[in-house]
Amino acid sequence: MTWPDALDVLGALLLLLGSLLSLVAAIGVLRFPDLLTRMHAATKPQVLGLMLVAAGLTLELRDARVAALLGLVVMAQMVTAPVAGHMLGRASYRAGQVDRDLLVVDDLTGVVERVDEERGAP
Amino acid sequence: MSGLVTALLLTSAMVLALSALMVTARITRGPTMLDRAMSFDVLVTITIMGIALDAALRRDAENLPLLLVATLLGFVGSVSVARFSPGSDDLDSDDGGEDDGAPARAADPELDEGSDAAPAPDADPDADPEADPDVDPGPSADREGPR
Image 1 (cartoon, rainbow over the protein chains, first blue to last red):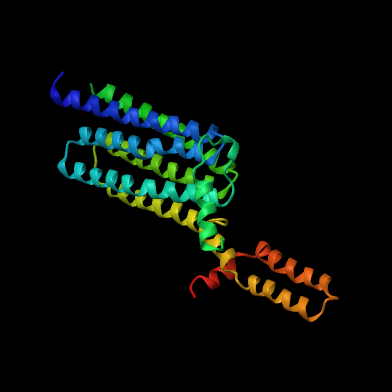
Image 2 (image 1 turned 45 degrees about the horizontal axis):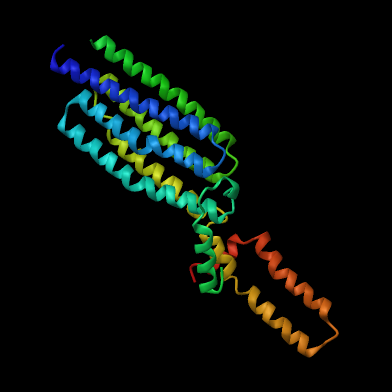
């Protein structure tokens, strides 16, 4: 086995690993009962799975420009995924769609009540 | 050796297709709009992985700028749905910002001072400002926001 073949197989394995991570996330998104738990499952392929796929594709193509572009994609996803998750979770909480019985720790209710009291209006 | 690589890539393509089907089922069933937005974000990620798999299979990097576009598209989509979904912070500030309801309640004591015999008409203006935001909180809030 020469070096290019080994890199090809390693890249294909990384791509398969990222795809399996997205399968796990899809099962979680389909089966979990709540938006917050579904978000917990959905975040895995968005960051780690995309990093694995980018690394695998870089090993497959072995091109510096491809590596730079994929690094940019991964960085953009790492910056934007937490913002999107934060806004989705907050919108779900403020809409009253969060099932309180499923929460283990709820630090947000006290904060929201205190802020509403300080502002005088909700 | 290239046969092994092709087999691995085709296997991961089938795995991606299966997971895309399951996420599409969640988009169809999803009880709330936020569920659909989150699932759409996952579907965009799976699409990105599919484009990367296609590039790896064909040994061709010409489609790779699509990955950057798809990433930003999914971000803008889910954030805008979360921002403008009913019940988000905006609508709460709308309910609070609807101080049109508060002056109406402040006008009630005036009615009390003016005529003691009208408690029942007071109850109706009390009920109306509370009922109106429930019926249509959105447009009035949108008008008050830019001001």
